[in-house]
Length: 325
Image (tube, rainbow, N blue to C red):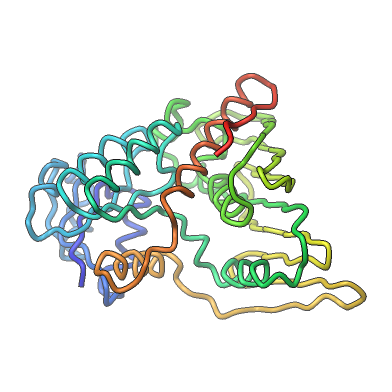
């Protein structure tokens, strides 16, 4: 059992604790850090972890083997570096960073310290996405030509915090909330991005923003892709991979459609699972040395590099090309 501390016990931090505490046989939270302890004191007592206000309390606690960051995006880099220097594994909620240079600082610090770096991309663990990646990797679709991804939800209004409305914390409209999950899926399937062009149409600014995000991609392997996200509208998830011989489409957490030449579409539904618990179980297994962590740090950096280019394209209104990897 890995003993962990969670930094940030707000809406998402509490979601993580609720998914793990008393349910996982691999990881548990023994400490929480909050700058507003009175508002979460009952929550900490219910889940039996010690509560304090200083980040250093988690770094210096000899019982803590791993630290989970559910903090504002701009804090991630310095916090990851501090955790790495303390010799503890670190799990960071997405996005890892807002700029590629900061992502490299984080990954280099963890690599130099020999500690594991995990990233909060729980959509990878959805049954539909696991099966989609298996189908793509099998080669049965032939050469992959194009991918379309969309993720919309109502979280930006339903779970608004003042820091989430700051342009410095959440550039790129819906990218940091929902779009980053689709971007992670695209990079996971296709590799590094070569060029992006971004469009955002805003109907209502924060708080409770309403806007539409559209991005066109070219990847280094010459595959094209589209990404869409709407704030705020009812939940919708779709990743559709098109190959020469067929296509595979993940819809939501559990549904998949495979289309092959000269054949009727095949529809599959898979048993649901708690993807938050699953991603922390996988992280804990890797911390314990029982398995390899499935997300490479190079991939984490590629995602942030593409994210930074998306924001640059939005600001300039022009396509942005990325440096070759």
